[in-house]
Image (cartoon, rainbow, N blue to C red; front, side, top):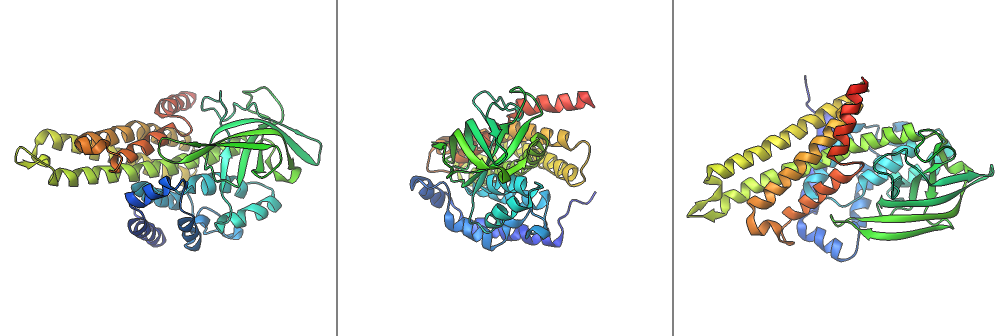
Length: 376
């Protein structure tokens, strides 16, 4: 089977890798975080100018016409450099939900500025008792025909600088019912919205959002039965997060090998010791295992395979388990330097731990994989 990239995909890969190599380093990242900035507005503007924010959107919507493979190419490069910009939240979650709605007016209102880099977005789905299930939704939405009135709370909403959130809100049914969940686009400047910013362990920022009878026009409805659409978009975002994890793991493996060539102990580089060579081989093996699972998931999603959900669950399980193992090995093999704030190795560990936690950790997705296989 041929897994080689097309000419366009290779050009995209080269472009993104060149950009992150020249524009991202640990010092720049730390400067951003110490300046209380969630990410670089200049970088985001450049993403828009280079057309990266249009990648997954159809050409008739003004997009690049790419797919999950192109998004994964971008995210793998971003993972290698710990890029802070909210590509997944704005483009792959909020943007894709807007793009796949049947509401053409809403799509035109928000998608064009999103692709131009003028609007940031996110998905508000998680609640205090959600336990990683999208269908667990106690946030209520009532309508009088002209407007929706939303009441409830969402927690740990990624991308604290979002201007627009796609909110899961229940129109009918019990808290855990799979039916009756609407997807509604809610601008954060609406009356009745209160937010609290939170700094996460990887340096990124999230929001807790309270909707107090928040009034939103009825035309902001994306879907009145949107659980299936939300799950589809989230699953594809999980593939992108898997690509980000693979990029981070690959960086850690290579950085550790290089460090082992220069760090000396007992009169020779530590890379000469066979016991440490074995550990670095394990890092390489785990990285390539995850890369293989990423390719399998990309193929399954691209071909719309009946087993694509299993492939995505398997990918999330593998990067959750082995991403952390690779990062912990990198920290240990760097010795005391690996736990210093000034060295970026520990920051990769924190990011990989956050990727594991997103939309359910490795244990959650291992259980999901088993349930899907059993049902089949």
